[in-house]
Amino acid sequence: MRYPKLRELKEAVKALFTGPYTTKFPSVPHEPFERFRGKPEFHPDTCIGCTACAQVCPVGAIEFRDEVTEGLARRVLIVRWDLCICCGQCQANCPPEKGIVLSREFDLATTEDPKALRQEIEKELLLCDCCGEVIAPRDQIAWVSRRLGPLCFANASLMLFYLNNLGLAPQEEGAPQGEKKEPLRADRITVLCPHCRREAVLKS
Image 1 (cartoon, rainbow, N blue to C red):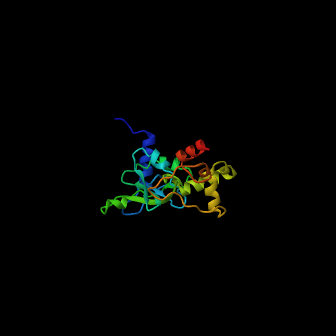
Image 2 (image 1 turned 60 degrees about the vertical axis):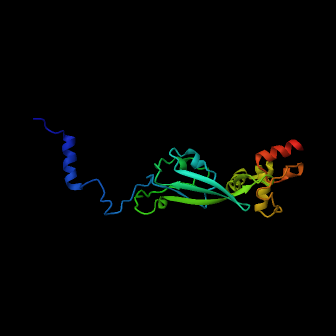
């Protein structure tokens, strides 16, 4: 007859007094530990709409689409919790570090509308003054200009956006939606996409 090891016997005696290690969820709410990786959530105030999270998501749980209607452009970002594996890549690769953050919420089971398992936020987009194409979200341009500080004056688009936010540059209307104009030399000091800026520089 083989006798149990002393370590195993010690653990068995200890379990008689300490009780089970598992929690009583779902009858009693469970509080995860501090670094638990739960569902990711967008924070609209700090998210810049750069789509870095969507590019690194291994399962495609984060999507985005750009919509331009009547001269107003917006980017819709969507995170689908029913596909998310809570790997944390979105939070780890977020440029402002707090645009999307993993919460400690893990109980996502539902019998209601599947759309309840997603979150959508919108970001206003900046359009090219010549061709009307999407350049980037306004929050992203503002974040870049703040990070660069005085160096943003080396780029005409960043400089104008920075001065416009300070109210130090006149607001000029770009090309109407669906209408494109040829970039000229004078357009170098406007907000342009890379393609139009290249044409304007070559023509100057």
